[in-house]
Length: 152
Image (cartoon, rainbow, N blue to C red; front, side, top):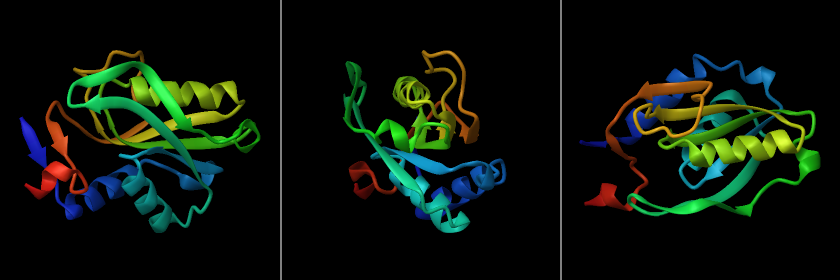
């Protein structure tokens, strides 16, 4: 089933995330593009967190179409992550492969990552574990207000 979200829905989901997160325990936000950009921006605005790093990751090439493994188009240099507590932010944990690969890269750089997503899909997850923080568990296909499909 498809679920179309409004901007107000997104704000409420981020507020639910922030009820779980102690932002003062983190040194930086690491936003996974593109889906994590809006939630990370809202988290930043609502908490005053200004240290925002970007992981540009290409994994999904279409609905249900993926690469064998994620391609990192951009990633912070290791010194930005080493010894840092990093909150990795994305919109959804679907298969979990994208978030898991970003988390692994942070760990390889000597960082201590935690993961926050608005939606967690445990039935679709193919990686061990789950996000440290999530606002909602679902099996629905989520259409965010910034998705081109939302305009239809």
